[in-house]
Image (cartoon, rainbow over all chains, first blue to last red):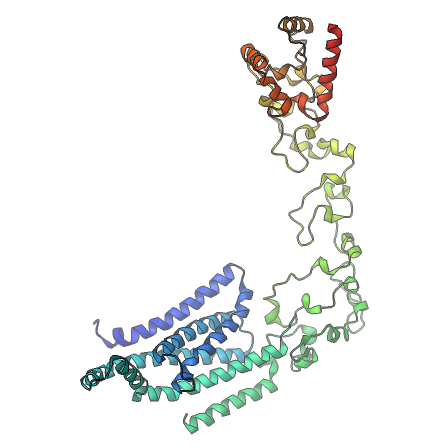
Length: 192
Length: 319
C-alpha cells in the first residue's frame, strides 16, 4: 500500500499544489481579518518580480549566463515561482474585476501545475539515471563531474524534453497575458 | 518550440489582444462605471489620459464646479439634494478621484475615507451647521455652532465636552447639567453642588477628596460634614464648638506646652490619638503637612492665607 503509485508519485504532487492553494486562502483570510485588503492590490508586484528572478535558471540552462550552479538555480527557480505564484494568487483572489487578469491567472495556475509536473518528472528522471552513477564511477570520473553530468542527463532525459514542449508555450502565454495586464494597469492607473 | 504550437499560441494571443481593443470594458476595465457614465465604458480615454490617470479637467468639462450640488450636468435642478448645502465650490483641492470612484471594482477597495473635511477651506470647515443638523436634545440646544469644540472631523463619536466654553458662573453650577448623576452615597448626600472642589471637569475619577490624608475618622468623630465645615465650605474647617474643644480650653492647654500656633489643628492632630499628635509636634514631623507630603486643607492654594492670618491674630492676643 505504502509503495503504491498513489503514495509514491501522486500524493506528493497533490500535496505541493494543495499547500499552495491553502497558503493562498490563509493569506486572503489574514488580509481581510486585519482590514489589509489594499495590500493584496500590490502583491502582484513582488510576485511578478520573484517569477522574473526565477528565470535566471532558464538563462543558465540555455548557457546565456555562465555563472551559477544549475542545481542551486533550479532550487531558486522552484522556490521563487512558488512564492511568486502565491503572491499573485492572493493578488488575483482579491481583485477579479475583468477578463484579461482572469486569463493571466488561469495561465498561471496551468503554469504552476505544469511546473510541479516538471518537478516530479525531474525527480523520476534522476531516479532512473541513478544507475548511471555507478557507471561513471567505474569510468573514474571525479565526484563533482559525476553530479554535474547526472544533473544535465536528468534535465535532458526524453520525458523532460517532451514536458518542455508543453511547459514553454504555457509559460509564454502566461508571460504575454501578464504583460498585457501590467501594461493596461500602467496605462490607466491613477498615479496620485 | 514546435512550429505548430508557436503558431497556435500566437494566434490565440492575437485574438485576445484584438478583444482587448474591441471590448475594453470587458477585458481590462475594473468593473462597470456609474450609471450616468455607462455610455463611456467602451472608450477609456474619455476620462483616462494614457499613463497619467484621470485629470479633474476631464470631470469639470461636464460637471461645472459652480453647479455641483445645485444642477445636474445637464443643467436640471436636483430634486433630491444629497447635502443641505453645496460645498464643492469651497474645496481646496482639485482631485475629484480623491473622493469619487467610477469603476465598481475599484470603489469597494478604496483606502481613503469618502470625504475629508480637510479638503474644505477654514471658514466652511467651521460652519458645520450648513451641512450637518444639530441633534435635537437638551445638551446640543445649549451649545454653540462650533461642533469641533467637542467633536472630531472624522467621527461624531467619541466626543469630549469641553467645559472651557462655559462661563465661570455656568461652570460652577455643575448640578444644572449633572444633577441626575450625583451619587446617592453618604459622602455626596452631604455635599454642596460645587463638584469642582474634588472633581475635575474632564473626568469624574480620580477625585481629590481623601479625608484620611487630612484627618482620620474614628467613632468619636463620625459626624456630619457641616459640623467641622460650616456652611458646606470644605476649603476650611474648625475643631471648636464641639463638646470639650472650646477655644479657651484648647488655647490654655497648648500654651502650657509652649505651643502658640494651635489654630491649624490637623497639622498635629491627624486623628483622635493625642500621643501621636504629641509625637508629631516634638519630632517636628508636623511640618510635613506644610510641605505638601501630607495634604492639608490649610496647605491648598488660596487657603494658605487664612490660617496664617488667624495665627497672627492669636499672637497679638498673646501680647
